[in-house]
Image (tube, rainbow, N blue to C red; front, side, top):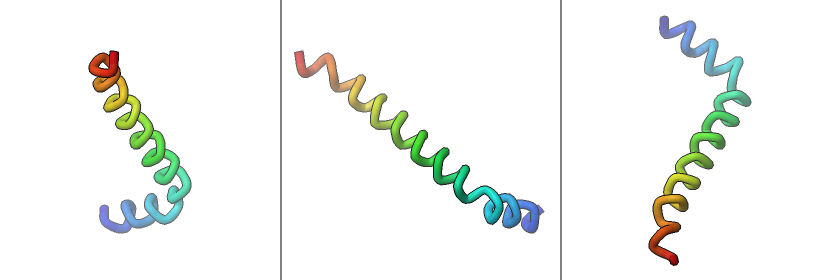
Amino acid sequence: MVTQFKSALRNGQTTLLQDAIGAASLVVMLVVGLHLPSLF
């Protein structure tokens, strides 16, 4: 199982980077959306 995880990590680094960027953007949009009503 550990070897499969290492293999997936090694083969999918670009995908993991894209997923991390997508998750970070979703968090930013959530925080901005939650703070938006307090600005008006």
